[in-house]
Image 1: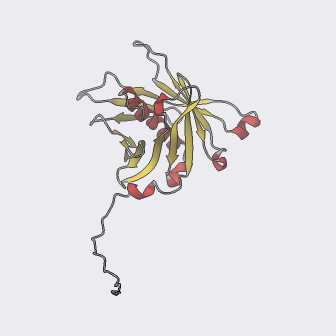
Image 2: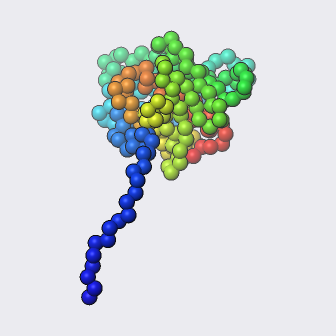
Image 3: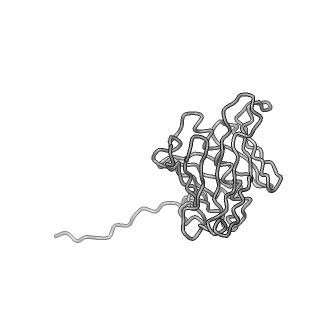
Length: 219
């Protein structure tokens, strides 16, 4: 029989992939499940037992009205289970989110997040009608959509690393009667302990989700 020899494999130059390709494989610091509990209401609940001490949230959509001056969405902080058991059950509206339907030129999809507790506003814009860009302090961030599986990722532009990923459920934004819309994983490192940052991620994700829903992309 002929001798078998180890064949030398061809060598390849190392490819430098963007940082966000690696980051999402890490264990998220905190994960939330988002449920559509009624036509105008969603709940956002920590998905892991060791994060149940974190607050839950509710997203309320305004009733349809062409002349309404109310925000399109309100993000409300709901006390965690332990706080509720101790009677500390005061709910707090922490942010409003609105699409700017009569924005400045050049026209593009725009939105504004008003973070009530920090008294700051965060303009968002989608110059390419696809990605949603905004700034947190001096750092640029962008929500963009990926496939296989369909998901939204929040990328920190300076480091090109992913800080959050929203993965659609099998029914996506067609969810009704308490069904899950999707799961939001946050890989924010030390920022994941910053409640204001978490709430900005939740609020900006809602804008991106609703934008794609309005274009018929329910995933």
